Length: 397
Image (cartoon, rainbow, N blue to C red; front, side, top):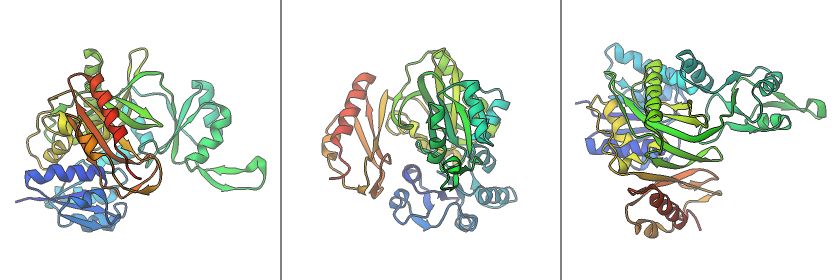
């Protein structure tokens, strides 16, 4: 019986995937370089190794029946080799497909691909010189975004440029300075290879959808949610989003087109802008379970994490039906400190309030340490209770 699931990456997503796989009878193994990563605390086995290292990934996968990943920076070359062996009668099944990961992990390539398939995206441009940034500003105006193409998540890798005077600081912020000089007129030499530009969308709401696509091209959608960002990090998610049926159908249509363009299988998430003129614009796609779908653990008949395990192991997809409206709030650290948790009792005393702590031993500014989900037929009441719960939880003394 095929029973061993290998998850590349051991963060909170790997942890929640592990917790979803265990009731279905699977043995879960984790590959992650950190000794006490969140997933290692609940998985059957933790292999300490670098998921960016090809040989470490290949060695880890050699004894697995199924391989998946929770992080885009996993070694694509290794995943592709495992996938190709499976198609030559190797026992290890790999989902999502490595081709999908390769296309998605570079955010500039994402934009190119979706534009090719006539999926609405904001204006964007590759950068080869500082002059390209200045020209983009002249064409599209301020503000606009400077973004990292690779390894950008949770607000890291994004910088807003409001004025021409902020260009160099944004480049420095995203690590683009190769070297410095004592001469003021030549302070920095910039490396633009990992950066691109994107126009700022004048949006009314930020939306997201989590969906799943099976090997047989069956698509299922979770409710469209509204997300609220603070400093480019998701802080709140409301399910369902209070938008028209027309917007919901447009979101689902774009998600279907994107999955087909990527030949994507398993759970994925797409973030959108709903512009003030009513247009739905794709922002980014995540080839994995996602923060905007954490509410599904309590609020839907099948969580996004169980759904991913089902797709990975070729089990029938579960129902995505919403059991109750919900609000999810992220628990973010605000300083560097060893983790101590206070206030759990006060949080859990609130009815229909669910607490998830990820098992990270160190707090760092803006680091996601957990989340709280509140169920209520009235989203305003759910929001008030979620904020109250978050205020009662203290991460350190």
